[in-house]
Every structure is written in structure tokens, then in C-alpha cells.
Image (cartoon, rainbow, N blue to C red; front, side):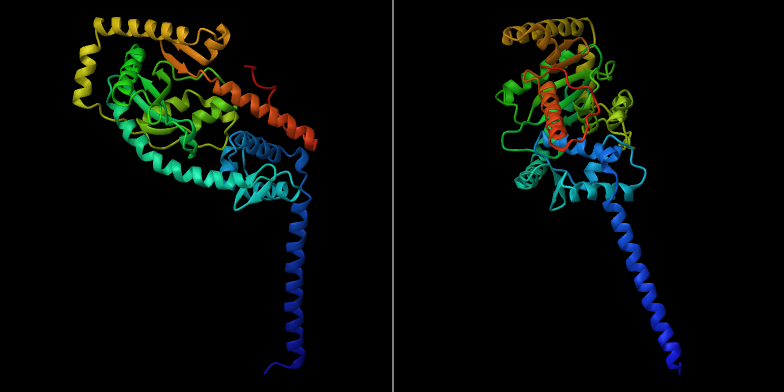
Length: 348
């Protein structure tokens, strides 16, 4: 049996260990509370990320902030401490695992409901993606827009980003538009085709946070290999998404016999004439429909070239960028933190 002195010494040793443990934890917590976040590139990057998605009233969780921020994360524990520090200093608010600006936590309920609706609408997106993939000269089908961010509301359309064979973009697009008008009563709800490129024009000319976000968050529905080729042609996105990893799936789909036969029938002089005719017809129609639009705005938002078709009459890209940079300026004025990484958005 141990002597009383030995027992006392053991108790003292245990007490000393517990005190040291508490002191170490307290010191670590105190150190995290004094992280110099005002000029820390990771803190500023987190703020930019939350502000960008605040344009859409979309709060983010920790995993999303780390994935979407524009600064490379090399120490996950430091990243968590900095994110925590942004909440203790009231630069960001945290509720139910979501980080957001301001005091309006109704954004969280809106996001959760939007995520649930997105899961339901994804069934329609898969169905119509298969239909689009069956059309002649379709080489890739990808979901863009709000559904690609896992959010939908009652008014949201399902947007598709399509890649075609070179020299057949406008023929392919016209066939898809005719299908929508004849069988879907011209409804965009499940079949909105705003952006089409061909395999010779994979590089996106715009290089900004909007274009980078739309690029990396595309959801591949048909032809994963081509999606990887598309990303590799736009590696500039790493300036905005350095923590994004290229998908590993590189499967290339087989073209069904009926589709091959249809393409063979149109992969000739007749197909060339139809391609040229539908290209000119589409451009004339767009110009007539939007004749009040300034020429510069028209060329920016309704881009029509042989290998690219972008139909954004609501000027989404520039409108969103304008709101984003306005929010940046308002945040800087309110907090004194200079977080703007770029010079600003193009007007209009």
C-alpha cells in the first residue's frame, strides 16, 4: 500500500498536469482571438467569398467557404481559427452552421428550402439532359445557373451549358429551340439554353469571378471527359478557385447509332448550308427582338459567332458583378477593411 506522502505527490502531479492543460488550451484560444485578420490574406479572401454569394442571398458553410475562397489553404486548422475570428469580431455572423453578412438570418431558411427544391428539380435536369445529349452534334451537356449551385426557387429555370461539334453549333441549337417550342410550349422552366460553344472554342474569353464561378460549378451531365478538357482550357479559374481539384472521372460516352446516322446525313454540304442559314437567321432574330439595345451591350450579352452562342439579354454577368463590387465598397466603408482584390467590374 502506497504511503500518504506518495498519494499526496500523485495528486499534486495530476493537479499540475490538469492546470498545465487548461493553461495551454487558454493560451491557444487567446492566441486565436488575437489573430491579425485585418491584413491576413485568408481572412480577406473569406470575406470576399461570403460577399460574392451574398449577392444571391446565399449563406455558406465552412466547407464551401474553404472550397470557394480565392486564396490557397495550406493549414486547415489556421483557416478554421481565422474563420472563427471573423465571427467573434462581428465581420461575419454564424447561425446553424452557415456564415453570412448582416443580421438577417432568414437567408438560412431560404437557402435550406432552395436546396430541397434543387434536389427535386435535379430529376428534371437529368431527364432533359439525356434528351439534349441525343440531338445531332451535341458533344457535352452541363447544368449551369442556380441549379449548379444547388439552389432553386419557384421561378427558377434549369439552365444548360452545351458543347457541340465544330461547324454545327447553330444547327444543333436551332433543333433544340424547335424542340422546346413544339413540345415544351416554348417554356424555359426545364429547358433554358443560354450558352453554347463548340469543341474548338472551349476557352471562355471573360476572366472574372463570375465567369470562374460559373465554370467550376458546372454540373457534368453528359461527357465527363470533355468537361475536363473544358476546365483545362480555362485554368485561369485557379486565380479565383485555387483550392478546386479537377474531377478524376474522364469517361467519354458512346454515340448511339441513331444519332450517328442523323449526323452522317447532315455532315455534308447540306449541313453546311443549314448551319450558315440558321446562324444568320438567329442573329437577325436577336437584333430585331432587341433592337433597342445598344450595340456594345448587344455584343457583350448576346454574343453570336460561328463557334459560340451566348444569349443573356438580362446582362446577368455584368449586373451580378456590379452588385458584387458595390457590396465590396459598402463593406469597406462600414468596416475600414480593404478587401477588394480587383479594380472593379465593367459597367453595363
